[in-house]
Image (cartoon, rainbow, N blue to C red; front, side, top):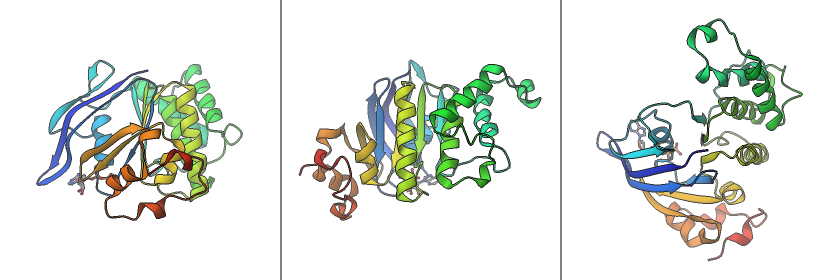
Length: 256
Ligand SMILES: Nc1ncnc2c1ncn2[C@@H]1O[C@H](COP(=O)(O)OP(=O)(O)OP(=O)(O)O)[C@@H](O)[C@H]1O
């Protein structure tokens, strides 16, 4: 397990300020949802955390080590499932071990018995053990994303990042995928940071919430502090009442 510390993170792309002086700290094992409208800086934050994008200013630490590039101990689930259609669910999950496999062994497709067991265990965690031999392209979007989660779990990282992992799914599949994602993170004690734009899902699954607006951190707090007023602050002019249905589990957590 690892904590995350972000100190004064600013990211500029030319004249665009994608993140402006963002700071927060996440203790080991917390499940945090990052919220914000399109363009608020969610993807940039996650890409800075996993070392795919370099900060313009500020520092990021995962555990005691500063982030200077992609790391084995940080895994990522992407919005597009990024899995290989012709390969089985098992084959895709197994590719998660590549981050830990020496180049020559991976070239020869020599996976250790432990890696194979890890892949099967990860598929079991996401409820796809029985489908492990099925080609990924024959699976539904939700199942494919669960394969993507299994692949991230096989990496055996201490930190799990997910960038809009359910954006392309229908509401029912999105809920199922989020349930598996949270269960996997909780069971394995991972520190998880998941970006979402759906307020309902965020409230249903988040333990702690980080709100971004125009690249600035405008909210950082837990369930009981995540009020309708705070949601309004994150979403600005958007009618947030309409984003919140009465039927979701966490409706009592929101008070104005
Ligand atoms: N590679 C890039 N080059 C130039 N501008 C970029 C780049 N990546 C992001 N931006 C800009 O930075 C800002 C934040 O973008 P980002 O993708 O992080 O937002 P987001 O909240 O993830 O949005 P979405 O939900 O639409 O993915 C936007 O103004 C975007 O246009």
